[in-house]
Length: 249
Image (cartoon, rainbow, N blue to C red; front, side, top):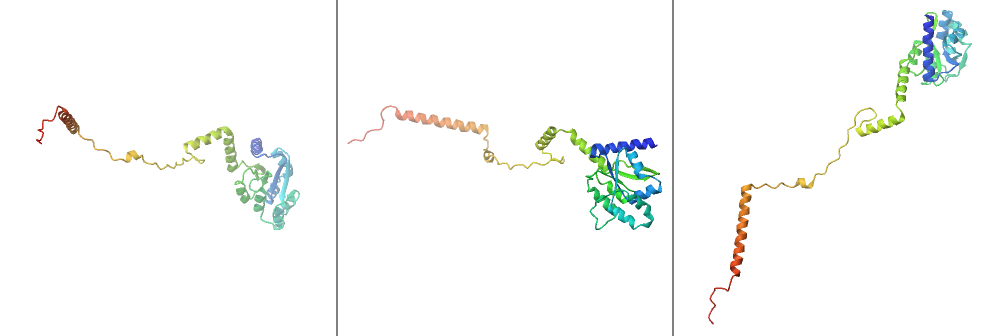
């Protein structure tokens, strides 16, 4: 069981090393609840933590965590343990806040300092699962346990890997094809604005009624008859002298 737990811890540490640039010495933020659980289960944090994480560690805490233990007499032993660690500057030096609020503020939303967080506080645990790249340590069954990466961190890593599979040239060609097809960045087809068409002036003219073929033949026959009559009149008028009698003087 110990070997299996060690393999799982190694796999989780490699996940944070490769995807979130964690490096030794690992910085571990510890609160009073973790120290109290270690004291109750007879765990030597300073000795066992480097062995479990298979690397050099720096154990640290905040001023707010120490101030909270000072007001609790039943946690005096946890306070003595926590005082041995480095104290990192937080934003609440003059006005201490709760440990859960202080630890979450130390992560600054993206955990830029690559902190591990060791706590037994459920409020801190639920808050950590919403932040990318924060390893969580807790004590269960007399052993230190490194929790599996949160769903938020896993989804982020998968999204980054998917983007890296597509080269910039391929992404540019995909974007150009989307523009041609009228598809937006969200994958939805965008409706093209239709231009107002100007009607063809010839199409606006009234269509002439077609005459029946029989009527066309009659009109053509009349025209030919009239033209023959005109020619005949011209011929008759131009032949010989006039036959009308001349008046006597």
